[in-house]
Image (cartoon, rainbow, N blue to C red; front, side, top):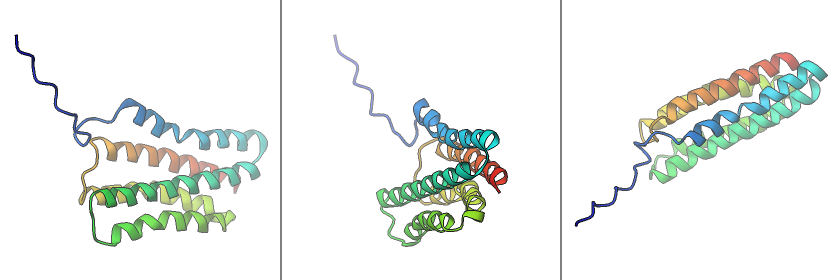
Length: 152
């Protein structure tokens, strides 16, 4: 009796994203939701500062993802790396501008999937990644805008 050959290794670029990736990615919106609740109940000073820090950290994290995606794909063009550094610089600048920093970071988060879409024209991204990025960015961007409005 012959055995069937083993299944070929799965191709992460064509497989759908694991449920944990989606769940944990979308859970990244929870801190801003908690801070919105805090701002409504307790007032806005702490919530605004904490939300500013969280948005800056997430934006910086995105830059790291873009840097690594370009590096793993062997891109030699310096432009993707220059774009990948911008989120950290914008996050740092926003933290120095408390009055407008949340607004700036919210807009940057909302626009961030445009970078993913641009990268997807040059490198292979996992199936479903762009859709998830739009969901995560719109959720976090809109909650950050809401927090900015509540703490202004």
